Amino acid sequence: MENLILVNTNDNEIGTEEKLKCHMDKGKLHRSLSIFVFNKKGELLLQRRSKEKRLWPLYWSNTCCTHPRNGEMVEKAAHRRLEEEMGFDCDLKEIFAFEYHAVYENVGSENEIDRVFLGQHDGRVFPNPKEVAEWKFVDIKKLKSDVKKNPQNYTPWFKIALDGVIKNYLGLSQP
Image (cartoon, rainbow, N blue to C red; front, side):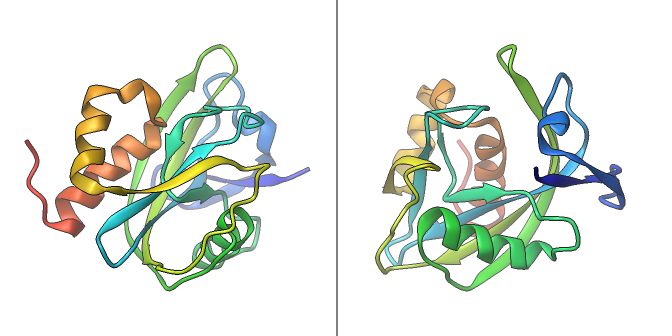
């Protein structure tokens, strides 16, 4: 049983709670992280979440995401999860954080302060099939267009974080 780190709106730890309970109903505010890995061509590594995921199964999302474990530094959690989920590790830089709440059907919700990390990787990818249904590198302008046309295909945190990554860290103008 995995416990998540509960936080207040200032991202100060206020306790821990079982993962399932954190994602029930409206959800309890907890700490998370999202990783965006690009290759040298500037393409983003996307993953389609496994059908085994309780929340947003088979939706496209960022390279990977997770929750830090109790007592685990956020950056260490990012490296751990990148290796566990996508089968590689790379240098990562934390670039911003945001708070969001999103409900998935009648199953549960995410209520998180999400820290966003950027990295670069041009080597092989070995995704964990229990976590990842498929993956691909995508041109960021084509991705931006598809997210606009088909927002229902992408996780809510990904759409929020992608806007911040594009606007503030890739230097692309918003339409």
